[in-house]
Image 1 (cartoon, one colour):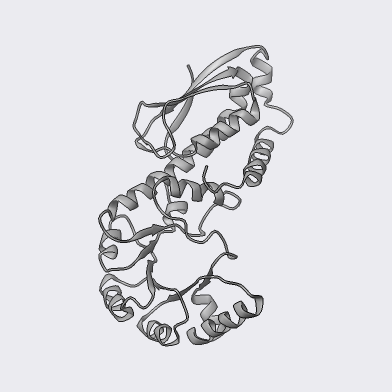
Image 2 (cartoon, rainbow, N blue to C red):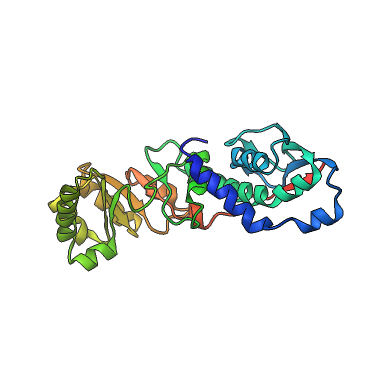
Length: 283
């Protein structure tokens, strides 16, 4: 689980189970003997990329340290309909308590990993990276970004604190591209911060102003059509990194990648994915 904060994961486990269980899984407590032992399998019902398995193991062990889990796939593996990802053996009541949180987590993470992989495959052979965005589920960003990595795409900034990204609203509130860039440098110097700077531009006029003021690491071309993006990439002429953004789909991503941009950011990875169909069934 590369780059997962143990404290953040612990909080997720505690809060998620409290949300679901509170003072007890009363249905299971009512009709399943507390001494009953059981075995369940995670069944794949749609093709995709597996993600969240390591989180699921943490969930099971948090619910009941006596669980035994037999794993047949790893995170990042391609899975297909009918595959069995793992089998879990332990108290039946404990399996039922953990079931929904395991499925919710793995279905969503696998859906994100699957879409991430599809975008990466769509630009295979081109020198471009697919990036995620901050368009994530509140409090679940750390898991969703892990799923993006599992699918082979690249995490962008984690939040507002670890990179400067001057977007359209910043420019409009500040007054101009030039003012926004210069005031940003004043702030970074004053606060003694060393943060990379991305500047979003909406048209060729803003792009020309951005190139003139400089002092940035990356220019984000927002909602440019392909022909305008080709023109913009030529004008930038490798003076800055170039990122394409705004409504780029699976059908158009390769065409945009072929313009020569270095990065393509895709908010859909974490806000428009389809959860992968997985099921936990008694074995």
